[in-house]
Length: 198
Image 1: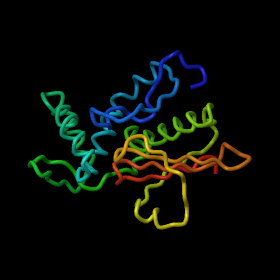
Image 2: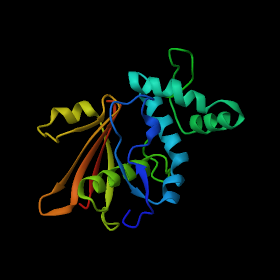
Image 3: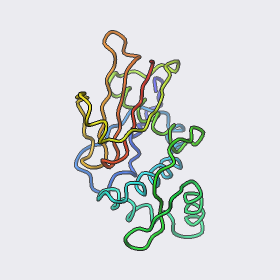
């Protein structure tokens, strides 16, 4: 990000949001080649999120207007088969569409999952501190139940990007901004914590 070529990337993939959004999405400088290289993973990431959160209104809207459309035709059918091969506990939506149950979010080698979340946290770090997270800073991702997290005595000062779609916090350690914690919530259902530099 330090030597970007004038292009900007949305920290959150634009395709996880409904067509109409209430504000501007956060962007950071990037290389165009890097930005374009993530588009395929952005689509797979969106498909996971919206199907896992199908019981949430905004996720259902995105799934019905974007995901189903992306599964049309021969190429779309291949995407659908790949998607179904990566999931388990399939369920039926209320309109009879086969999707999935619990997300498989622990595949570190799958660039559409954990690395996508790491990319988001690194983007939020850059957005807040105006510098990249050093490549030497270890970043670990953990998935938690948002209800359990809300029970603990910790006020992270959430920042809402789009209501019922995405909110986050990012806090750095006083005196050492390479160490810190970030939380991401998608569709008020999927929650992950990222610890960096610790």
